[in-house]
Length: 358
Ligand code: NAD
Ligand code: GLY
Image 1 (cartoon, rainbow, N blue to C red):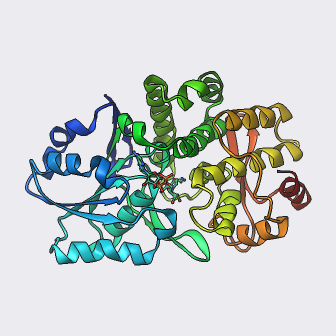
Image 2: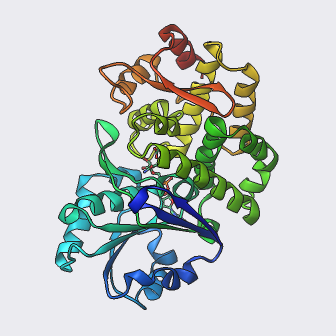
């Protein structure tokens, strides 16, 4: 088993990564003994993993469950309220612990419920998609969507531990696996050129779910995320680089309707836009754009924006992004493979060209 630490002083927490990790849950959670737990999951994951998880956790604790509808379109305040209702109906106290069993949607909503229930309770992440294993379960960003903008309502609230069982990826649909690979490619682009090269060599192994390749990709991604979060937990600066391609991607997700393009698919096209713009600005060698496009295609990801989205639509949706400060659009761009900056200092003419080209 690999154990990483997200180093945040007295709120530091472990990330456990292994195959067949779920079977070790009860031995890894002795501190929960005697406490109330609420496992939050959805209608797709519940028949696959919920009984097993509840049985293992029940060794130490009283375990209740709440099963949410599945889908990004349900990541909203109405669904969040179901978690609060379940907690109140089962008289969960301030000492309760919430357990997110699922992908990023379940994780983000459970985390936000934990941030706000009785002004804040503990929560644990058990991510079951590649995207949530390499990104959303680590770092404490929690929240829900608003019809006017993605992830616009939320809080920073760190989990107390993250349990990543690589074997849960066996049941993940191919399209969801590819969506997770988009965030893995992101780490190579923003922080680690060697990892990007490793991905070029191992993309076929990842797509065919080779266990060793998946384990390494998850571990390296979590290491990079943990390092960035430890340096800048609340996104005062550095952490924004984790949003490479996301400003473009969120515009696609909002325009198409939540859940039509998967988050990782929108990020894939968005990353290519950010890379293309970096090349147009003269900051990045054009070979990086070609290599990025090739890698994303090999991962089964989209590399062009929806046919029916205009540059004007992009610009108006990008104007409500969380990285807009004082009405100035800020973007994550690359200055080299493995090196990213967040800046508003770019030519808007070049941005317009990128929006037409990709
Ligand atoms: P998701 O949670 O919607 O899961 C994708 C699909 O896979 C769902 O249908 C789900 O039920 C199903 N599923 C999950 N695990 C499965 C398994 N093991 N076997 C079979 N099916 C399984 O999507 P996601 O890609 O995990 O997460 C996307 C969300 O994460 C977005 O809302 C995005 O905004 C958010 N996100 C948050 C952060 C953060 O830092 N908090 C970072 C990145 C993304
Ligand atoms: N997914 C971006 C972040 O966690 O900051």
